[in-house]
Length: 179
Image 1: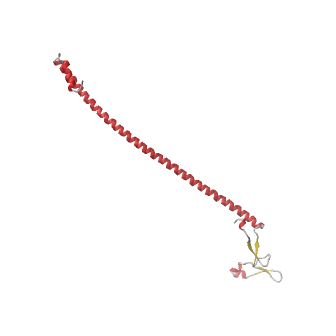
Image 2: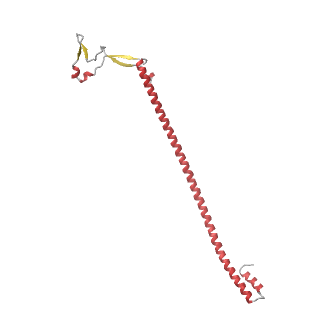
Image 3: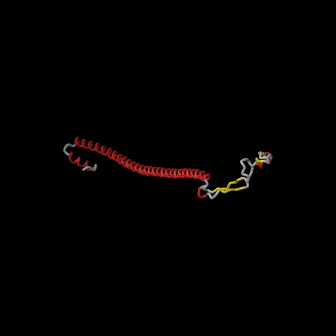
């Protein structure tokens, strides 16, 4: 409760402002007497004094309680405000962390796609080079066989006709596509 909200507090004052309890009265001889009805009736203990007095909000008793209540409320509101700021800060930090994680995950996926693409290109190149290598090996084997055949033919021509070797070598070269 704020001080500006207090307009007045009411309290009850007994009609007989005696220093004794309302269950305790003074008889004619000014000796205290105890009312025995208070033990028989349980509602008898709930005594309601008939007079009501107002207390202004500026009285010293209320203002000291009000000030301490006000300080407690301010401290409580400060604690609540700090908790809310911390909660908001934590949520924002968690959101930033999730965004960083998502960005990192996106970068990793982009890298995976790039590496897979690069891998496929390298596999295609490897297959192409492998096929070329196989073709070159087959050509090499075929050329070696042709060279061997040509040497044998040349050797056979030299042995058989020593004068006509130049004509026959040219004819053999033309047969095999060599010129």
